Image (cartoon, rainbow, N blue to C red; front, side):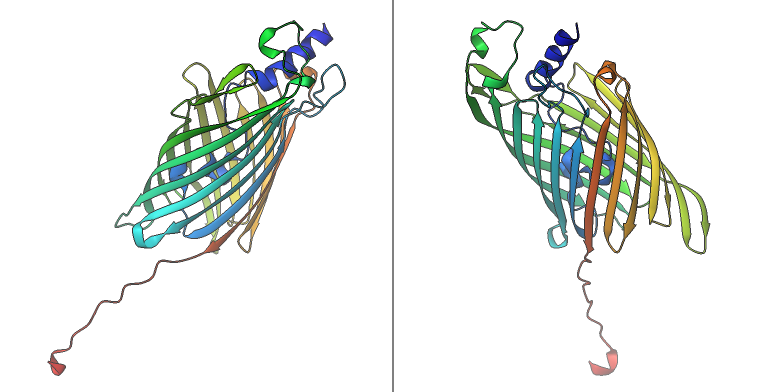
Length: 316
């Protein structure tokens, strides 16, 4: 029974993922991966990195580690002169004997408001995904399956596009909606046709000021992330406390998957965060949970101030 269970799980890991994007517990620290409209949403040049090991201890019957391993690099910046933002995402994702390397270029047009604390972004992205599978490592229930008879490593490249919108009020509220892999492009890898799954994301967060003493504010920040491929839906809810814009800690719940604890610190433009997920699904029988670390840095920049000409009637 255990052999069949592990075989089925390892097979599902690299053949039938429900969502194409990597899973991140600290998604709220950089929204550009799920929504290109977040590009340039801060008055700063921001770069960040995620590292995540999901379902620790998950192995196949040969003892090979098949736990998903993900690494993400994000960078984005505003271009004030044209009310825009540009960004890039580089994602490495290893699931069993499948490896994915994706590059995504983001552009967002930021609609200016009279109130500078408000902003609305409309974003587009183009992406390239390089996917490779080592068919020689697969453990199959039906060894004679003609679609999976390849005994070597095969690869292919899949292009696609994303779209998103995002609204935010600084330290008050943010709301975003996006669609990724809208073309649902596909390619042949070995004897199997692999396609991108169209996914939709809804993100939202609200800042509740609990107290402010000597300019040191304490916020309660509930947020959520909803994912759907129009067949499956996954809900994720997060609540964290943030003190003096320096320290934060909280808990997260991913429906029918995991509960998580998370904490982080901000200092001199740097942000460091970490989380641990305790698996609550049937995978808890073979998994020791998931760990994730985050490192980011933002370098503040400001738009150039336009000087208005002043005339004095004494010099006319």
